[in-house]
Length: 355
Length: 279
Image (cartoon, rainbow over all chains, first blue to last red; front, side):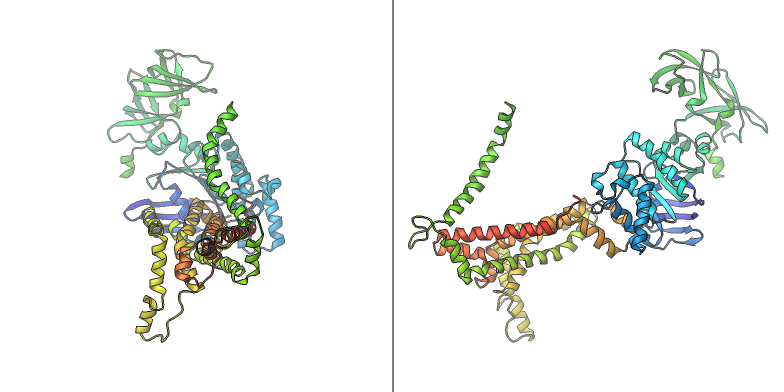
């Protein structure tokens, strides 16, 4: 098991800067996801760790050894690609054996290790097949086994599930996570799918514009996003811009349009004397009109099996609310909205953070 | 009804293939078994003389291994020269790729006669190369650069190089660039990646490029005629000689068929040797 540290990693292509000084430490056996929209630098970070991109400044350490200047083939990494990148002219067994041959492992040992790896990903019957004769999910399992059979220091995964269909993707999520836990390998996983990052990771690193916006466990990122942008990227977020009416050591009193009042455990209000608070759709309850903290009118109603999604027009702007299927509220109906003050999250002021 | 309509749809192409491929083959096949005659293309009745004459006269029979040798050597030279070019273009930036593509294709815009004649100007005894070397005092007698296998293979390789580059290029471009990265992450050096991944994965291109160049080289007439100056006897030259100069249609047809069948056998053996189970 290896610890990976990125120290002020900078990557620039001429004038454009892809990574603006990334610092991150991934612990022994930890599963960390790099999450962000395309162009945020998550793939570049992974390529820098793998050695496919030279870094412009900073350092990459594996267990306190600086490997920044090493060639990819000398870094002892296992990598899984979005396109699987299997060798098309080799059978499954030959694909798995390739990395061991490069490491000059004795032939008899190669055979046992390849057999064990194929068992691990449940592909033993397919040993003599060529990649073309396998389904997408099977190919991805071969790619995973090929990366792991060499027992690398770290495992890097670059959007490995992006080419699979939805159902298979859900299966593979669990499969990869279980396998990673069993092997106990330090893993860095790149994805633009927040659901994937949430369900699989010990820690999610949200990136925007070549910078880390937040690095925290999934629950923390979801419930306590560091910025409005993180809040909106990770799941659905209702953000209310509210006036602060009173404040003491324990929290702040907020006024809602229409006379409602809320109290949140709060840090300092924003510079303009207001506060922006986030409520996730499932943290808001629909009540009778007049009740709750805020009034509104249902503009859209979407039934999606497990729950119902309501779009509600309010004086704080349009909000999204998830309700149980047992409750039936029609489009056009006036409702009240009740917040759970304990779960409201006051978003930190970016200007205050900058000071 | 549906069947009738779909067979109507293929009728035009079927008619074309029959008229211009099947029928000529049958005509040549029949002609090759005709009896030879004096003063006219062919005589009454049938005979095997076209074939026996070819194999009994070493002047003719030896042209076959000579042609195959030239064809194989040209193919090999093309492969060795074209592979680095294709590799370079495949990994060049988009802007450069179009430019380099154009350079590779540009010789095809100049007629084959002009290009072959160009080589005679360069390679001749009083050609550019020999006269320059002589003027510099490096040689006394001109180097034998043409009217031999060397000159012919050189010119053929030049003429057919694009036909090797293009299939190689498309095979290399079809390759997922991530597989070389995967190989590196697994610990392979650049040379090992070429030997164990890039080259084998480009085999479909190697195969079609080689077959294309080989078939074009052994059947080419203009280049061996001009650069070889009738001193390099390829079967194709003899076929034309028999048909047009000696006016012996049965013999010419027999030779043409012998060449076609031999080429077919060589191609089959090559395809068999380079068979890929993975495609």
